[in-house]
Length: 292
Length: 345
View 1 (cartoon, rainbow over the protein chains, first blue to last red):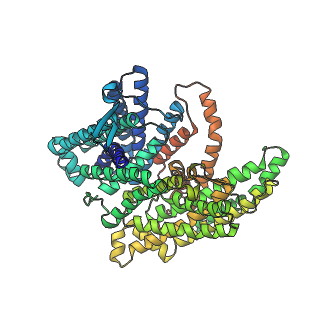
View 2 (view 1 turned 90 degrees about the vertical axis):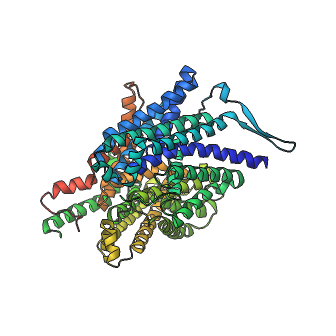
View 3 (view 1 turned 60 degrees about the vertical axis):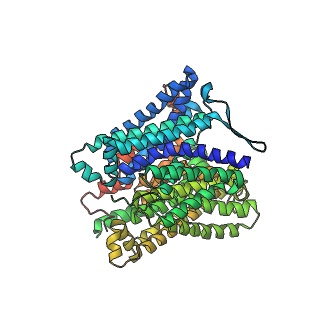
């Protein structure tokens, strides 16, 4: 029972990270139909730059603020100077983001090497919290992972508010449904694209820094989070915030239960979830049929 | 329609290329003997065989992407099934080589068929995402499932049946000619397939699936068939690959390798099967000699250290931005300026 609770909490922590990263991926895809293959790289930027800032200044909060902004800068530059050149061509857009991910990934590898790193969060949010204490059962969990969980819920709420209660959110939602119409209504869709790309990169960078603090940071993480983002949006539905949350929880829990109970076949559970969703609802559980 | 001059230029260049490919090993052995190059084996195996097996894999992608409109990032996983089939059966469980070869000819097609069932109902960028997810899941599975794949460290001693460590040149030359025969066979198979009724229907689906469906074509069945055929070819590439590498580990089918194949196909030009050869040779030469160049650059003590992947990434970015039709698109466009595009059938 105790193991089950811990595994569930691990799954939810992983889901929290998946959600933050994948919601950015999903937003970019939903509005711009760009498969941002550099999304995992933006995650790695947030993580590695965050680690560097934390390592030199010793201040976790500064790193939390600055590192995601570096990811935003990279994301916006990529959108502004590279993606606009090939706009409208799916394959070329994917290729450009792949090229950026190869280059940045290699530069990071050359700079940071293959060592596994971790960021130590400040004392108030580290240590362990006792969640449950009865005679037969005692559940203790790292405080920072709980913090990550709450941060993800907060980010989810802020995103929901942004998308559903603000003018920008209205434009984004309208753009997801019918891009040409929004453009025709006189809204500067190019500027919205840049904002959304920046927002997506911010979420990836934030996820990266939280991941480096809650779990660890190692080469190959960019691929792991690209894959999780892909599966989360395929399962949950493209361009849907609720879908990203649902997909992240499913994929996060499935991964952790799998690793705990059938280590050699863990990935197959994720695989089966994806295949089932594609067979029954190709647009994803909460996805809508999007016309191009 | 092809004009005569175009056909002649293409045929002449094709014949010259094939003659070059056939005479390549003796030329290299001769150059090594007179001392122009240091080791013939390196040029025959590392440059020659590697280019050929990558070209085969790249053609399977070019066929799907260029003529079926399906940019599959799942080819590397199917390649991996072919490699692992041979490695598991022959090197790990001691079955005779022919068992492994037959398995590598059958299993990848089955896996490709299953992948197709999952992915062909989607189109364009969704298809790319789903096949990429499938490939990455296959990679993770190979990493996790030690019983079948021995996990991270992989399976060793998967050399080709004729491999003889005492006589490298002769086993490499044999390998080269087998790879060449396979690569040319695949080239003619695909070149022929795209001209058949099936191939024309496939191109129709690529251009307008809805119209083809309205004309009574079974779009899904055509796509599944194309994907399975490409999977069969990717499996053969997997067999060549596992022989070439002499071992098989998840690293051979990771995201980087996957992207490399996409890059080779795009670099050569998705509409041109000969482009896969050009792309593969270009790629192999760049990866082989890039480290010399980056070592030289890094000796200048620039603020950022460069790996050779940075160079590959930059090449890729330039191709993605400026060379949409690949090297062969540029080449044929330049050579046959006044003619109709060879692909515009």
